[in-house]
Length: 356
Image (cartoon, rainbow, N blue to C red):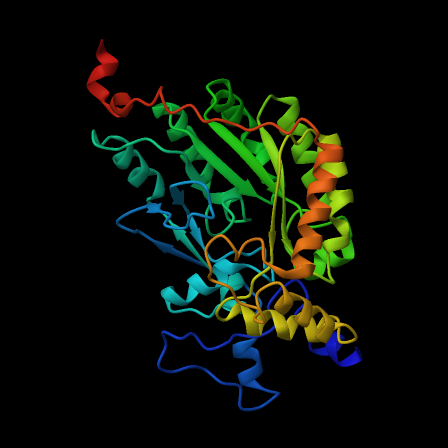
């Protein structure tokens, strides 16, 4: 434990940079002291601006429930150790480890691309998930306001949008969200993985506190913005026992729906998570690891449709049963939200129309 404290990157989830499978070469630390250490362990977050050609992504997975996603940022300073999005950072030439938290790619022209997309006559309206990858309300959003302007664009065109976040910054945009809600154009899910703050600081080091996330649910509900809680991911042996308390508190705060997934450790996330697990919980690391494997047919990774999100086996079944019992108890009248896709107007951006 003493060794963990000395060599631990406080405020970060990952504790090293695994090699990206798309890179032929990599930096390695030859010495534990001197310039190599200073170079490889620099703490400052780097913001990288980019101008992609497209911004709407078609979601092929049937597990998600929505047909499209929009991600204004790549990489995420929140540093959630379990995040499946870490693997996507490798496509940009970065590591899924510390790079994912320290090198944040900002899609500078996201709003312009979205407006151009909405102006197409052949666009068939379906709700878009913001974000399907990294958190659209991570720290850099406070400066760029890309997410806020995306919401304004959706309001302008009357386009439905779903949001999932774990950052209290979303309350800044309650004015826009309220207008979207008046037209049944928005639904928000707040990700809450537990109630233990000490655990949160290890699992999700740069996220809003659990208390503040509950306050977000309360604020959204107060303003008539449909919202729910996402108890995800559940990590057996780490936070599965917190399911009832999360659902009880979320329901009291105004959440009207709830979702759940069981952790899966695909790609580089497997090595990043295991390193974190051993360093933080050496006494139960093996037990937790084997329980995760039990949920995925003897592996910690899982790509099987309809199974990967909920797992299988006795441990997974007990987790899902606990979730169902808790949801039925605290949200007996859980509501199913339906997006308004009928009021979309692709001509909303036509400047000439504003003359009449």
